[in-house]
Image 1 (cartoon, rainbow, N blue to C red):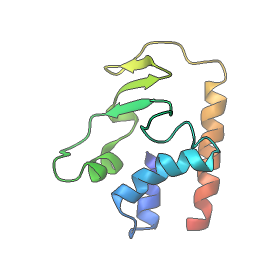
Image 2 (image 1 turned 60 degrees about the vertical axis):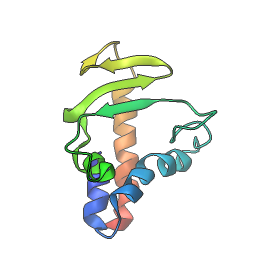
Image 3 (image 1 turned 30 degrees about the vertical axis):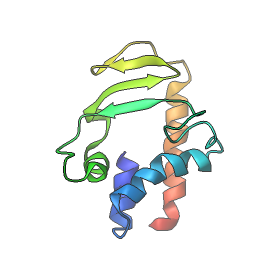
Length: 116
């Protein structure tokens, strides 16, 4: 979510709802998996990441963009299985997870470069 906050800082005219859509539906579409991921909808994978954010009663999108991240991650459900629950990792990461994370970060930096 740090990338979402960076986008917001570089383009302050973008609203939190628009940034949220960029990191969910639009992000999945850009990766070519928008028909299966990116939104909670019939026929799509129901992967969820749950975050403990500040007061969401005013604007849940602002709370999400402003507060979601590794430090506030509570639980993750992926492919119908709990991966993280109450902040605890329930299964070992696959051996190539670090490489995949690094590649994802590199791709995000590259995508954001034109905004800088």
